[in-house]
Length: 547
Image 1 (cartoon, helix red, strand yellow):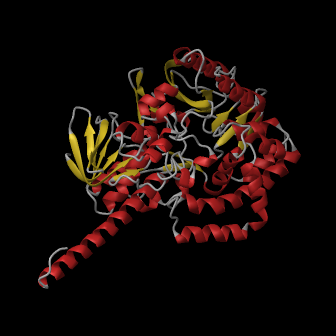
Image 2 (cartoon, one colour):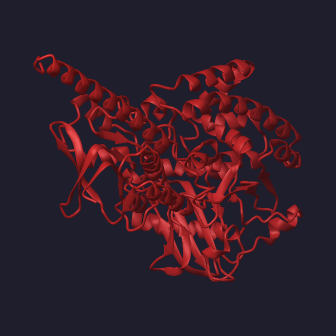
């Protein structure tokens, strides 16, 4: 535990993905995690101390992008280490106050069929939008799966081929991707139900900001790959990764918060954990949490150049006016949804999808209130009863309730102690109209507002994306110019996590890409080292010096 080829700091899913690939490549890998259990934002743990007999997914829930990757196949997570994922269809449902609803099915035609009830015009417009977005996914996805500044030729070829094939859609792609989120929705649709559904779950950029329309690309991922959940909770993902890592000789050490990166002669050579213990990294250190936290607090001052330090200081983590909030509720009974299930009449279990249940105007108003520093009158977000997917997460006859929103104020004027309570009461009040019993069965609650997320997950400003998800902070600018290629200008230091290319969410691509970068770099180092050794040996045989 005192030395390894690679020390990975952070046992979230990206850190563990990278560690598993590195160990599989033959490197000695040690993962150190600050919290008492691994998993980071994919943790599933007992709800201690409030209700220890209940299990909660502490942050994330749906694996929205994992199915776009080869990680499951590469690491044999399902075939060898027991990871079980199941596609949720529909993944999302928009619930209206009057009992009506719109399901977002994986098949766009099925969604359009439901949308005809509200607007025949919008049903056709939705299929038109899908044609544009599907072309955009084909163009963009290969570049997500490769290095952001030195993309593989195969990825570039796939992108070029997709652009040629979808050339008729390129103009439309450019139009909606550069429009604001609200502008794109207003241009395509007239009914509230579809506009609200496509806004509430995607508050990446301010809704009126240009370039915000790109968020709708999620629809293309939804239709092409489907959205899955892991049996046993999101924690099943890091559990399988750890089994893979350990089988290849790696290990994980928890309750070991790193206080500083050790730098010798300009090179990162290890980490110092709380209490003063130093762990040596023979080949390099990979950090897999908020890059702004790493480069601001762990890396000693003066190591980065003034120019790079300035870029780090300006990594945006709280510039959108909105922030994230998460609520878990342990319930003593089963919540029901008779009003909306009766209206549908198709037997769909509405407790299983991620539901949204505020209208379009309420969502726009919430964003404006947040920008003013006010707690919104309504807090739109996504809700689900995880026990509808896996009953083992609560005692028999009981439920868990999970709620997430990206529409809470970044700087509440009343302070976070009051704002946290106000947001929580608002969420429970509004949810009670849709989930019968939620306000009667409460056993315990676990709200996580911005400062709580920051403390629990070591993310500056409680930013679950680690870097504001604005379009100018993707690819070669994520997290900042000069720091986007996983390998940093500081020898021995590598970056991964949600704040690196391509994106946040449960997908593992930042970890996979970082590991690929490290493995290739180490192999080049080894070849150069062998070449130098052979040259020195030849010169020695010839009676020459080492100069």
